[in-house]
Image 1: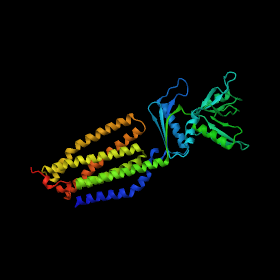
Image 2 (image 1 turned 60 degrees about the horizontal axis):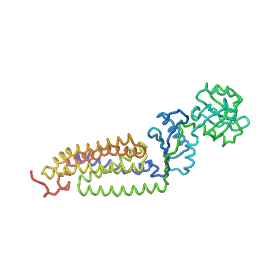
Image 3 (image 1 turned 135 degrees about the vertical axis):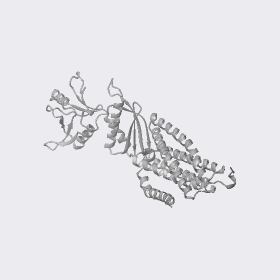
Image 4 (image 1 turned 120 degrees about the vertical axis):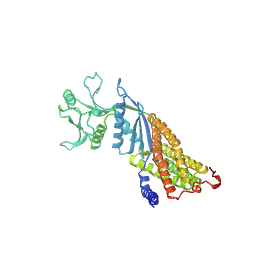
Length: 416
């Protein structure tokens, strides 16, 4: 009786849990731009100045700056990923104004404050005094002077450096450039020792906000050159998702039907384990905040195929044992034992290959490899151990002790 309660209770609780939570989980899955629509840009990083190197640290800092800019725009879950030694990939899903995103991400690549100190005759603002990364992050703000005229309050990281600059340039202009475009040229009115200053001028409120936002965006440590881009419309992305889900559902239904017809009771248990396996993967995607893409779905489907293979290997071994004349409990035990090594060898080999792909691949290749590794781990837990646990419970209960329960006919059983 305890075994019956254990089996029925396990199946019932899991079924109710999956039925109740699945609709909400599906809504929470984050879709990639190839399924939701959006665009992707691959940048190649180059030094800003002669003699500068593209280091790993500089690449990471540039990626962080791009991420900050994308977040500041309120774009839909942007992904900024360094790749290799000198590339950064930007993915933004659900974007309606691609041109505006491109402009914001790349244009303020080199924010500088320049002076005329030491310039030759005819040169103007030739010396770079401060760069965007010299300012406190998000330290610029719009304020108003005594005449209610908009101005910009700024804060620098190095107070001593700023004091030296303002003392040297007292009464001179300190121009603000974005790349090579002059934004403003305020005059230094006093020596500033506390690391704060005000940029004043005949600015409108919109102009003051633009200067504030430009300073807050800061300078990118490296220059970015666009090497590749692709855009996926929202309609095309939704069509891809719909067609992929339709194909996946049809294939899954065919697989489950085959398992039940071919292996009867074990096939029914395997089908339940496959459904649990899929639910667990969706749960992991939501909890870990992974992004589901077309390559990820391909790995998803491939993993299901491998899970089915694991069940087929196990049940075919059990059927062979039954055909030799062994009792069903003995056949289940020996068949499960003999198949386990082959299944584990196959899965561990695939995990090793996927790990290499993840380590050396980029972009979609990494995503494919990660999903495949997760798929195999979940498959081992559900389609190897959990399905065997349920089968052993049924055998011990006495509900799966006939050869016909495994699709084996009496005439196929050989006497020992």
